[in-house]
Amino acid sequence: SLSFTSALSVALAVVFVVITAGITIVKLINGSIPMPRWMPHVTDMASIWNLFTVVPVLVTAFICHYN
Image (cartoon, rainbow, N blue to C red):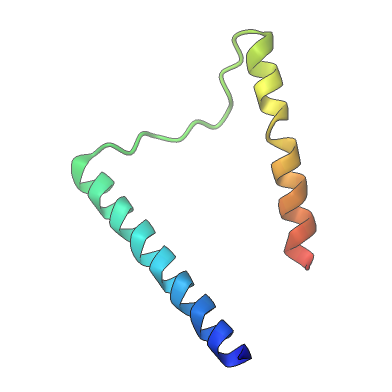
């Protein structure tokens, strides 16, 4: 049972890589990948609050990384 679960997880990881690579190749061919921003565009109070919506995601990622 554990070997089937491991095989399924590896297969899903490979599917994820293939889909991600396919989307990236299509976007590179189209030239639709913009240059990333180094700093956020803060224009009003709502954009500052939008920055704080990232904090729970980052905290969860760092906590689950060790598990």
